[in-house]
Length: 399
Ligand SMILES: Cc1ncc(COP(=O)(O)O)c(C=O)c1O
Image 1 (cartoon, rainbow, N blue to C red):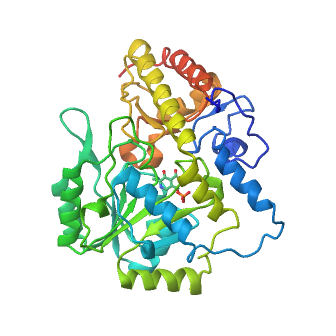
Image 2 (cartoon, helix red, strand yellow):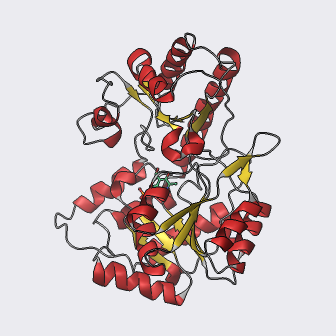
């Protein structure tokens, strides 16, 4: 294999959030702490992606750039979504955004009013909550619940009741779900979609993690199940899939004509954020059209890291709950059996263990006692962190 993900690339001093702002988030960390927090990968990009950047630089003029009329760009997005997810997208429904989170902010501002209710399912990726509140909307939470087999699902009665009672206008749906790594079943998606249709709730489905699924598991875009309905907006991106989140690229699929014109007005006229940087057109084509070798290797590598963790936990950490997630490169470790203040435990992982993982509380109260670990790094880092975790946990009393 031409890629080597075992090799540790020194990312320090590259303005990397994961490495260079570690100290800000974990003041007790030092230059040797293994950062397993921010959700990007430590892997080098595909050859095709690097080549696309070099090729663009052959022309030294880095002027204003657009993609709205780039048919090849749009075909690359459509073909990928069709091949990987059986999702048929009309090219005219694709809108570039510098990120999924900025897109959610645009949609919240254009499709809802201050004071309107927006529903989420905690524990969930922190900005889901923050952007609702910072845009002066009312945050409604219908938490995920664990079924009799320990699998997370939605409490559909609670979800419907809260939508109805709060006159909810928008649902920020995380599919697959970060941090718990769930891929929603067709049955669940149909139920969710029907409830949202019944109460005219606009669904923004954040599918940024959709390409990173375990072998044999299929992600279904919710919009693909409701082809005749246009309340479903899908957020897609090559950023997580190909490890290019620093390039600021996502594609938002909007079918509804009124939403489209509001999106255009807001992104073009009010905020002037409709256009990408010069590298984006080439990057998207290189990622979706010419990076399959890298993509398949990455899936395998991440899956092997998860298998390593699963075996390690089963053999060494009987009080930690862990299952390999169906999607994402983020593991969700249940440490609720330990009798300790979890922020103290988080500190101990840094000071005694030499690694940094995120306490689940930041994804909502429901995440208390859980830790999220980013496994998209060299196996050596994972091995070191898991062995250090065992050392830290051996001194902590059980409840
Ligand atoms: C569910 C989810 N949505 C969105 C993002 C960030 O997306 P972007 O960088 O495109 O704003 C992340 C990053 O971790 C994520 O996990």
